[in-house]
Length: 397
Ligand SMILES: [Zn+2]
Image (cartoon, rainbow, N blue to C red; front, side, top):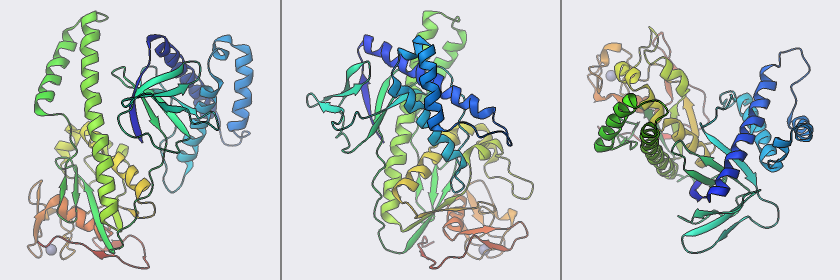
């Protein structure tokens, strides 16, 4: 998704804010409708029925009618897609939830038809058509993607507006080398590859982190509702937004790189929300880096792991496999011996059976590459039969 900084005039910004409010309102109505549905009742209304209801609501409420019908209908369409993703058995997403004002604000627009509603004004400035707001300028920071059919306008926590054109990235062709790679998510290391390569998602620099801490202290002291507090909050939000941008960028580049280099990419099958909730793991399979994980709960979410996997699936469709992560950290990737004691330290793994030593995250990544998820009894629970087992690319240790 290519994102551009949108530069609305104050008058346009007011319109955009209204659109956000309407989209949120309509979305929340849909969430509520579906939340009240129980098995046995007639089915919750689908997109068509919801659109009919929207027309009725617009006839009744002038403030809603004053807004853009396109924006409101797209909110319903977004909701329908979110529900479909929620029910997708292959790749279930979270249930669409209630949207709060001021958080993840945005709306989507579809092009008006034949003419594509983006034009270039000068080398660095473009314009995009937004209903009721007219032509809104944006920073032409890179080539606008051809063939985008819809675009999404968002406001981040720092109050910056962006526009993103929805284009599913063209799949990256497989290299055809028959190689598989395992990717292990880590805390200290954002991602370890079975090749031994360590990938780090960038965050804030040391200086920025210090600044952030200082600002947070300032915020704690500032009086509620004061101008000073508003300014501090704004600065904090900008720092956070910078961090998010860097991670997004990292996920983009890393996913392209992996899709280019390997035929098959195996990752742990985990839902980030579950993992952050139970960093401790279970009794049989204690988690790794427990202290770091609970402490850096948000760090994991922020490490861009979820984004990376999503992008991988976009760019290497059919070439990403999810492996059940149980015991990948306690299994020796050389001899297959499973023993919790093999974990010598947080970073190092020394096999109690064969003495093989390796970075713990890389060892886990190699197990993932091999598709080995080990059952609690210690047997090899190879994930699933494969017609053609790709050759593993292993680090020459
Ligand atoms: Zn071993």
